[in-house]
Amino acid sequence: MTTLGARHAKACRDLDEAALGGLWTLQQWTHELSEAQRICLGLFDGPLFDGPPFDRPRLVALACGWMVVDELHITAVAVAPERRRCGFGRVLLEALLQRAAAGGARHATLEVSSCNAAALALYSNCGFETAGCRRNYYSDGRDALIQWRKLT
Image (cartoon, rainbow, N blue to C red):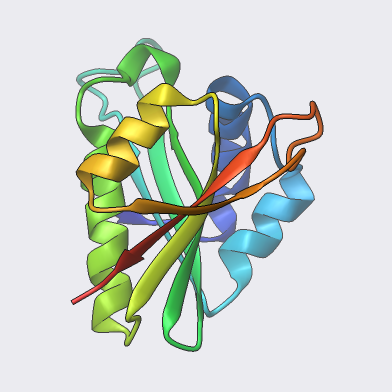
C-alpha cells in the first residue's frame, strides 16, 4: 500500500477513467493529492504482475478522502475493472478508515450511485448505512445515496 501524492495524479486520473468513467480531470486529481487534509492510498501492480516494459508498476486501486473536523469525507474508491472482486477495494477502504480514525475522525461519509450494487455491497460490508439520497446528483441524472459510518 502506498500513500499517494501529487506525483501520482496521472495514474489516479487513468484509473479513474478506466474504473469510474473519468469523474475528475488531471487538475482535480493534482489538487486532491496535494492538500494536507487529504488521505489518499493506492495499490500498485509490481513488476512480476505487470506486462512489458516491466519498469513501471501500474495503479490498480485507490481510496481517497479528506478530513473535515472530525469526519472523513470519502471522495473516491476505484479498482481497475480487471482487478475487481479481489478484495483490493475493501483493503484500501479499511486502511483509509483506520488512518482517519487515528487522525481524530469519529465518522465517515460518502456518496455512491444508487445503481452501483457492487459498491453498495462493499460499503454495507464495511459498516456503512444509507442516511439519505441526493436526487440527480450525477451528471447523467443518477441519484446518489449518502452513506454514513461511525468510527471507533
